[in-house]
Length: 227
Image 1 (cartoon, helix red, strand yellow):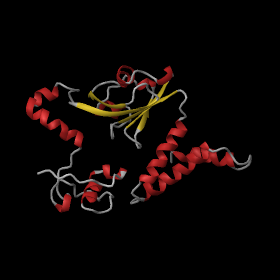
Image 2 (cartoon, rainbow, N blue to C red; image 1 turned 180 degrees about the vertical axis):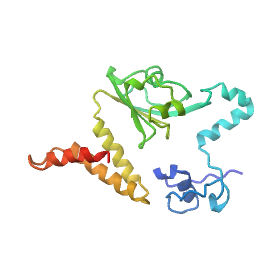
Image 3 (tube, rainbow, N blue to C red; image 1 turned 90 degrees about the vertical axis):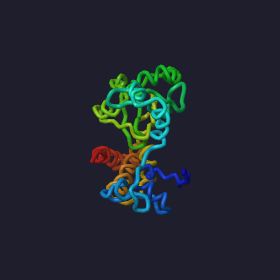
Image 4 (cartoon, rainbow, N blue to C red; image 1 turned 135 degrees about the horizontal axis):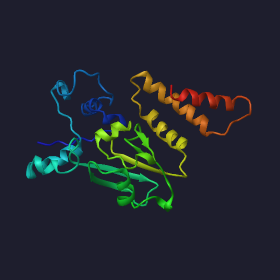
């Protein structure tokens, strides 16, 4: 039997235990782990949590076999991967590619290259809390091991491409604004940290009000941002 339940759509419910709380009609905030869902999940029963993208592969694997599935992708990261392409590219949308496809192949061959033939600057991967890759990483294969080697994550499968005219500080501020609004507020580093980081980025992107303190505050903010 399959029962489809619509949730409120909160960003934090992408975390598996927050999703279970949402399914139970509770506030969508993560649970302490352990116990893990496989031991104590939905309504305290052992629960397997899978992404819809993973489940979509199951019929094909049953029909064609594991060996067939393993011919797609890489040895350690078999199968296909969905990406949502957006940003300064000629063709945006949802794509499915074999694991091991490079960033350059996706941007040039699938997305049709940069919009208005601008120069590539960066690509943000892994969703709002992911990281950016630069031109030197364009030939990196997109699989879990290769991304970990350049300190990036697969995350939710978002790929936002920035060109030479994109201000990376504005881009950071945009995502930080989303993250601080989406925090479940359960732990202080996230609840307070995202708020402070957004204030610093707001200050950097705003014209100074005077010549005495504003510039100094902006400089201090840049120094404090990483901390």
